Length: 153
Length: 137
Image (cartoon, rainbow over all chains, first blue to last red; front, side, top):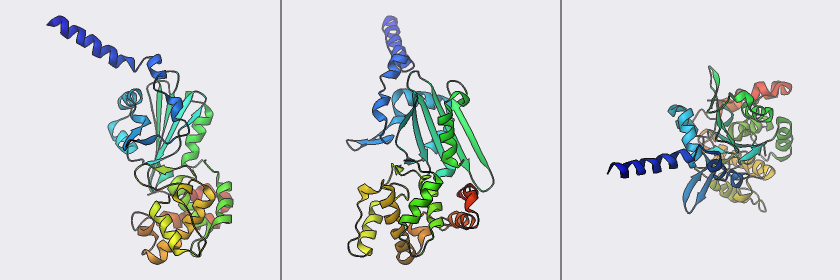
């Protein structure tokens, strides 16, 4: 019985770990999303790029739940784009797009993700970046500039 | 496509069909709705493009504008058609839907920051970013 549990555990562990491996990452098929909206309706169901297995696993780890709740309300979306080897997803709040927004940056070559958020209201503004890799400062300048332009630079 | 302020100002100047709202007002509204991104699409509704035009708004424009004026919702990611249709719709919302706060936006405060932006933009076009930063809740 113990042996069966052990084999089952190894099977589950290897399956879960797979999403963190570069080869599995490449299999997510990011290229196919470029030029499309990050939410696609397939057979009546919403298919979201940020909810694909590997991406969701990482964002859930690095982004606080209250920030994820906000991102999930950012229904206004731009077409998925590619800058260098990074996939870019832009989302913002309906009727308040430049003042409540998120940019999700996915490294196509390895399982690294950056999530940038911006908020502005009457009394304050804030910018937050979350990542499972290096600080956002390592991202290409074109990506950082694009984020700034989204909220008005 | 993400437009610059200068590109947007030209597009609005050439395509604003509204008799009630200034070019500056529409620039500020577009910034609020889509951040000047003509591909912006709401995943939970049919709101599409620069002015986030819905299917019902397109239908209303088609049935309330001069003969020969006709738009398709599938064209609303086209910046020119979106601004034309959206600016027609603004007048309809103002005159037939109890104003744009509820006819276009979500609540009574919807247009407040747009008007603040409009006033700022009219008084100082050179520093347009100061005006655009007035767009928030």
